[in-house]
Structure formats: structure tokens, C-alpha cells
Length: 310
Image (cartoon, rainbow, N blue to C red; front, side, top):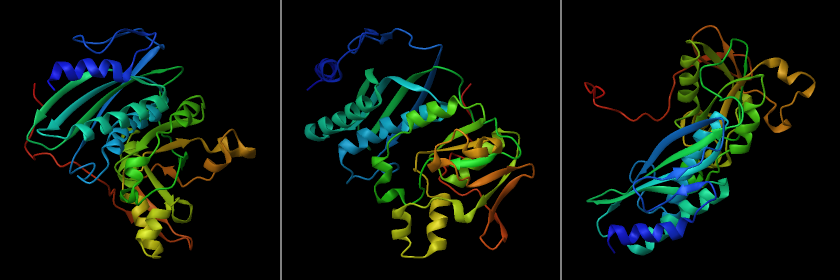
């Protein structure tokens, strides 16, 4: 099958939408705007980095969509359109390709989004799948740079142990992100993708170089992290702090939002920490001890002397 035949098939495979004016098969898609402001993001998944060769192609397809949708969720956006880029290893089996596309389509449908275009190429490998997601805001955008001293810290779900399968099967918290964006007491938010500590440090830096303390007994640790730790509570906690690929939401909010129960759903009400004026990260243990934390997490290392092209 050549590229053009494949592309014609994609138009039928992903279908259309009443707001899609020109779809798959032309040089670019044309869509009608669906909100006051558009939100755009782009994330790839790369074989050997974000998944291994044994991963089911359908789950790889779901992951690349949901990684992007988690970023939209962190901004408080609604998902609309997706662009899909495939770089397939030469000789990549047709059955695997179709399974990957079904995973993409399933994740898009679950979020109410439509694949409207993209590109396909072949290479010696590895498999690289990239999605660009376009969404819209119905109100304000949540950003990383709004945390305030005294804010409480919250996460949307358990953390750690994602390589046991969660990194392929997570669901983007789009409804929660949209709900948080409507709460004026919520000041900053981001997707936990590289590890709680590293992502929290990123949020605090964006907010003016603030610090935070985390409450060891309040951090939700996933069952997978506990199982992989073999009952070692400290190891499980370390996994929750630094493993990454949880794709839960992290946010800060004014502590008064918790008064008398506040508008926050009960399962998110208990804070995992608070924002401090003093830079740095600390872990507060159950006995009151306070120990410093390094901002551990996953980092893509770039060449030391590389500079962005002009």
C-alpha cells in the first residue's frame, strides 16, 4: 500500500464532523472555531523511550492521544481536533498498524475529539507516533505560573509504579480540568508526567521561585507502586514522588476553599502539601521531621552545547 492509498483510507477510518470543513486528504484541514480561545499542544511517543517493543499497538495509540489530552486537561480545555503523524519502521506489519490506529480512534472518541489530518512516513526505526491536539476554552486557562504562598497542593489520583501498565492505560482527567478552571480559588495547575517532584519544582519556578513542603502521610501511593516496593513503605513513597507518567493533575488553591468542605469534591479535599515563600522542596514526616527533597523525575537530556535554531 502506498501513502496516498493509505491516506484515503484514513479519511473513512476516522470519519468527519459538522465543524470539519476540509478533512483528511487535502494539504491541511479546515475547521470552524469552537470556543473563545484555542489551546494547542503536541507530544510524541517513541519506541524505546515511552513504550517498549512488546507493548500492544492499540495501547500505544491510546497513549499518544491521552498524553496530549492530559495536557489539555491541565489547561482546563475541552478537546476538539487531533493531527496524527506516523513514522513507521519499514516493514511494520499491517495488522499492527491497524491496531495502533484503532487505539488512536478509540481514545479520540472517548474524549469527543476527531482526527482531522496528519502525515505518514517510513524510516529504519524506531516507531514514532506524534499527536497535535487542539482544544478550546469556555473560560479561563489554568497555567503553571499562578501559585501563591500559603496555597494548598492537591493531586487527582494515586502516583507511582506507572510502568506496571498505568503509563499505557491512563485516562486524561478532562472533566476535572474543566471544573478546576471554573474555581477561582485554584491558582495553578499542571499535568504530572515527569514525576511529582520535578513537575512541582517546575510549577514553583514558573510561579516566581517559590518552595513547597509535602506531607508524607497524605501523598496517594498507587497499588502498583506498593506492590513493586514489596511492602517497603519508603520505597513506595519514593516511587510516588519521582516515577512519572502518572498523568494526574497537580494544582494549588487557596486554603480557604477547604473551609466548611468548600466546592472541592471530597476525594480531592485532603491537601498533599503547601506552597512556601522559601525556595526548595521538603518532606514532612508523620513525626514532624522535615527533610529536603531533590526535584527528581524523568528528564530528556539534550546535548550540552546545543542551542535553538534561529
